[in-house]
Amino acid sequence: MAFQQGLSGLATASKALDVTSNNIANASTVGFKSADTHFSDVYAASLSGGGATQVGIGASASSIAQQYTQGNITTTSNSLDVAINGAGFYRLSTGGAVSYSRNGQFHTDANGYIVNDAGANLTGYAADSTGKIIPTTPTPLQISTSDIAPQATGATSKGVAAVLNLDSTQSVPGTAWTAPTGTNTPQTGTYNYSTATTIYDTLGNAHTLTMFFAKGTPTAAETAAGATGAWDVHFQVDGTSEANVSSSPVRLTFNSSGALTTTMPIAGFSVNLAGVAADLGTQNNATTPLSFNFNFTGTTQFGSSFSTNALSQDGYAAGHLAGLSIGKDGIVQGNYSNGQTRNLAQIVLANFADPNGLMAVGNNAWVETSASGQPVVGAPNTGTLGVLQSGAVEDSNVDLTSELVNMIVEQRNYQASAQSIKTQDQIMQTLVNLR
View 1: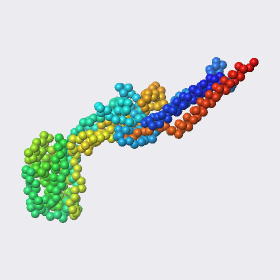
View 2: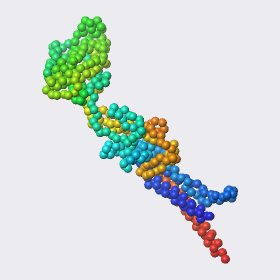
View 3: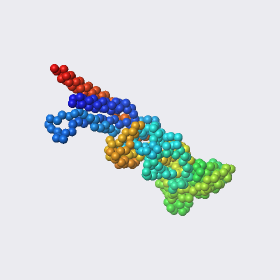
């Protein structure tokens, strides 16, 4: 019987050595999870059952259990490299066949799909044309390289906003304001200060909106309402006639504390783009007039120098896709040349009731089995699923020091089992030599 016991010891030690060698070989494999060999003893079956004197007939390798402990996170220079910090697996699709992986080394293929080195498609939720993520059945993620459409100023209620300080010590200009026509510029000495901002039409064309501030004298009605200071704001677009801006001029009044008393925002501020194009001798096919709200809320009249504290507007030009970024929630965001961002997709993760029930199929991937249970799929950082880190990968969780020690132990076990066979052989030889 010692022969059989020794042979089983050799087999199990050899199996354990195989597992250890595989761990060591994958010490640098991204997303690799090390495995342990589990052993069990073996007893002969008997109709009469066992007893206190029953002797085992060896050992067997009962299972190879993978250890899904977290690996270290290492940063990379590829924004599509993604590391999972916590539980979960990437959901991959190859010709419709679904597999799961912890290897987050991804790139885009010729068709814009996010794939791994084996060509498997990363799956997740797609976004609509407005950037809204639509949680449905996960599908292969494809990154659109289309330009982002322009947005005209005034597309939202924000419109144009300006926060300034108008110097209360300034005098009323000595020369009366004369509205410029054609491409004439305002006469020097007819205003105290000017500033400009960029606005956009429906085609994404940029236009320069210039504001000229001329100190005025409050009217009797304005004085009765508590105004002690007044300014007229005249507007020009692209240096053309003031008549192209229907709301020009705008009257701003201030109280004795320097606070703005004019009701804001100014609704329906309008620019005649056809008139602008005619003055410039060009053509513009954008929607005209261009209407938006204009808001001077926060503007003051203090006894300090003119200052432009903030200028903003809600339009932008068309933009090219300049780069990608991935958030900890798995949302893939496009960064465009016009400074805008838009959600393009969301990576999903999957988890299992028993990850040890998954079957390894190579290429850092596992597939579902009846033992693992069905996957629970969701967005990262929800439920039990981990978070993602872009520009990073999860290293193998192999501990080389432990594996090298295990190799020594397994070698000793192998030698000891071989020695038991040798000893049994010597005993048998002694019996054969009896006469």
